[in-house]
Length: 346
Image 1 (tube, rainbow, N blue to C red):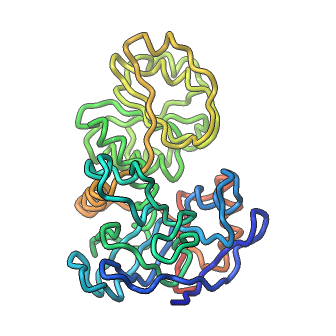
Image 2 (cartoon, rainbow, N blue to C red):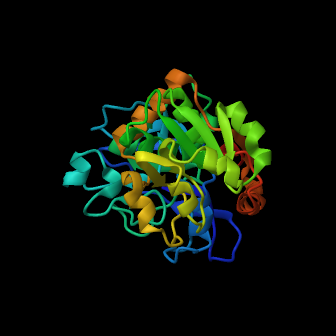
C-alpha cells in the first residue's frame, strides 16, 4: 500500500513529503493510523548519516502512537480502535536465547529497527513513524492506556524505556540514592521514574539554571558537577547513577560519587568516551555499564507503570511542516523536553 510520509533523500537534505510503500497486511500484522510521533535525537543522527548506516530515502520516527485500523486473522491481542504504540523495534527472531529472555532488542540474529532496518516481507529499508500509517507484527505492538495523553505518551516508546530499563535491571527501589546526570529527554524521564519508584533523586548538571525545573520534576537536591565542594559533599554516597549525557565526556568525576557496589549506567553517549581511571572502579567495587532500550514485555511494563502513576513526557507539539527547524532546535538543546509531531498535519 502507498502511504504519505516525510523523508530525507540524503544526509544534507531536508525532510520533505514523500510516498512510501508499506507491505500488505500479513496474518499476524497490525495496521496503525499514526496520530503522533516523537522526535528522538537518534532520528537526527540517522537522517544526517552521522552514524554511517543510513539508507535513503530515509523516514525517521520510532516514538509512535496511533489507533489500530485493521488486524490480520491471527491477531488476538489487538483490535480495531485500540490505542497502541510502536517503539524502536518492529521484528526479531523470537527464538534465540535473548528473545526468550524478553531481550528482543539484543536478538542474536539481529532485531529489525523501526527505521533503517531491512523490511522482512517486501525487502528494502524499514520506514519509521513520520508517516500516516505503519504495518507492524503484532508481537511488537504495545498497548497504551486511554488514561494517558497520546501525544505526551509517544516519547515513552524510546526516551521512556531507555530510562526505565536500567532502573529496573539494576533494581532501583525505595531508599536508594539515585543521581541522574543531565536534564534532557532521557534525564527528565529518569527523574520521574526514579521518584515514582521511591528513590531519593538528585539531578547532576553543569548548568545550575536547570535546578528549578529539576525540583519541579521531583528531585530532592541539585548537584552542580563542576563545583568541587558540592561534589566532595556527595562523594561515595550514590547507589546508582543514570548517565544521560549524549556526547563524549569525562566519567571520572562521577565515578567518585558512587558508594560501595554502586553502578553508573551509560544511556546517552553512543560514541567513544574519555579514559577512565581503573583505581576509581577498584575502590568500593564500583561498576560502569551500558543500557539501550528494553524488550517488549519490559516496555509494556513501563507503559502500564506510567498509566498507574500518571507519568508522561514533557513535550512541545509541532506540525509536520516544522520538523526541520525542530531538528535544529534539538541539536541546540532548545526543547523541554521532547518534540512530538501531530501527524494529522501531514
